[in-house]
Length: 405
Ligand code: 3PG
Image (cartoon, rainbow, N blue to C red; front, side, top):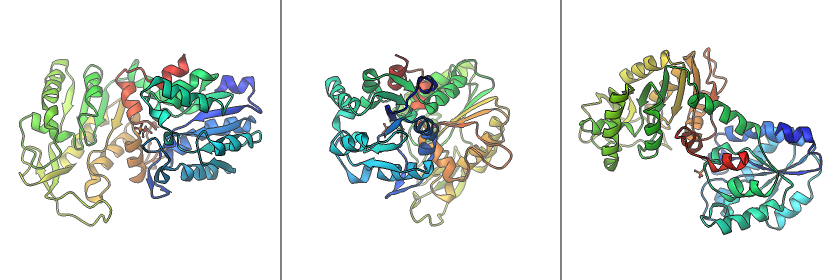
């Protein structure tokens, strides 16, 4: 983008593909981190006199307009953060978008409606995506890719559109890739990875890669119960992906062979009932050893011994990557495990990266952020969940390949 700015963008229509896929409660944004993350790019372009057209997806609407997934709240928040009027087009490539973009003065910013209100955005059919990308291209002279959270998607605005316009990487994408390179090239050791979240199946490919790269893997969250089961422990009514047990067994063996320390919870908080995440009323839970989960109980967080253990395993790390909560952090009874790991990263003198849209939202809603006050901070909170995992898996990411092209 510096190259673009140096060439001059005054009067040019610049399409910024952002990732404004923020968590919403109705129309209230509960974490605006992704909007803040794209501000440097939008500001720099606007200050240089570009006519900035910001586009994004939000949620997973079914290829047609759906008010529940409107980008209007995100557009309003962008305006507040910029301290400037941001016009909002109520469609994506229709009359509203065309006239909104035509009405932009130099230095003004517009947001167009959710890209996924058009089936062409996510279509698997190359021609359909190409046709939609052609309509988007008509709105701009230049393309800036800055939606890091979506670079793993082969979607029209991510993959096809940059081919139709002069294209550049925005500041966010440049920062994110710079950070992820530190986790993949010449990694400073010990390299410790903490993985949580509900499903093992989402993390299989990254674990596969990390077994050849990381020194230590700490496992928590719902996925830990499939690991405990694979080790022969009963897990009661905890989350379990029975079909993943063979893969997990193979990982446990490979970890041993490769000298990777694969650490599982030693104790867990269990309850007979999943907590009510809305009311957040206190629940009845007990702490049990991880190999003694009662048949009628469900594991909902790592226990106090595991918190201490994981903190000690993180303390001497030179590089840390963390993706996925350690428990049902949305309920205060089961947030301590996630908080303990967050705090351990903050206390760590090493290079610490929080990966993931959900993990990023989790640390912020739990009161931690990039500027955490207790003497330290995370070095980087990635805006990409799936994108950062796929980068670490070593995959070619369509949105990055299109920009490099
Ligand atoms: C994310 O939230 O990870 C990105 O915005 C991508 O969203 P998607 O998984 O719906 O493609």
